[in-house]
Length: 425
Ligand code: URA
Image (cartoon, rainbow, N blue to C red; front, side, top):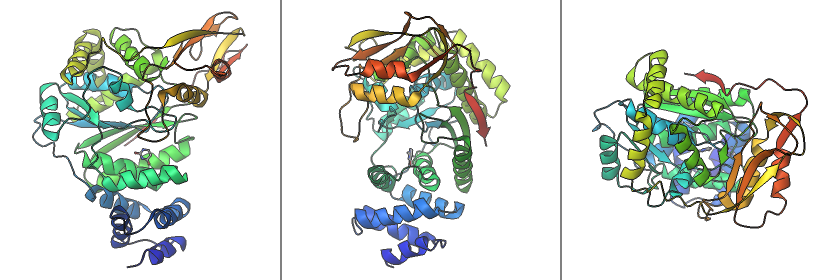
């Protein structure tokens, strides 16, 4: 087999066989074909696509390139949750303890943030002592004892995806539906859960900019799940505006703590309750309405809050010692009117420039920096009122302007779009 023939075949839009995709992926992992040749292959897929069977082939080859996790020793229903990455997305911190409290195991392997969106691993690292690198045995013990555990993605899972995803990031070939679907699903299937809930973000601050392409991606991932007899459910949620009121690593942990104290942003509450209910109903095979009642009860009774603190402590974290040392400055509104939009992309850029994000996986991040929003979508604001606060450790360099520019304040109030767009099963 020759790489050039396989690339040529895709260039002519012909369907690839399993062994051809396997040859390209495995040869790249072993260093037998170089970045340039693999880039050519990736670009042909980017432009000509893969059909569903080829997408499954790619997923399968990437799963087999690494380890898989066996969760069969857990004698409870198990559900995994994945977010495609959003601005201010601290949902994992909130839903994992809620779902664990309902008697469902949540084994979560998360990634570090890359580019503009933050990763759950970085948020948890802002808690002093929190251990993200557990052995397989420790991971299973935590799940057995607490019901949820969040660790960093093992280097040994879907090894080929790591290499190919890094290459795609470097050459700008991330936004391809078959490549994203196979990348996400290879990691999720290898991680062992039978039920996988995907929170697929759509809008300015997300990979998927519109509902049409997000729907296509969702359907592809649900289909891949069928090849493995896994239940995959994708919820499309709005990411045109940031999620919640805090954006930045330690700040988002604080927002999760506030959430369990009953102080929550409306949209964050809505999505958290929805995703937890979906996780519980599909894992326990109960109705969504009953799962939702259970979720609300677990929140109001304080059981979910206790589970949140139990989980963080059990993984070694001291939640009262957050890495949150930063200066702060309030940003004042120069206009009177209604907040009709807060551009999540601009907020992400701002938080990234403050030092909360990274370009390469190995870059350090500043856990303390970020922004809080005092005014959110739909709120009335008067000139001179505080719009929000920037937490910073280096020069502001016009970032206050960027903050103001991200707000669209108009005389007439516009209808606020729903956060949950649709769910695809
Ligand atoms: N997240 C992934 O894990 N892979 C992609 O390709 C895109 C988002």
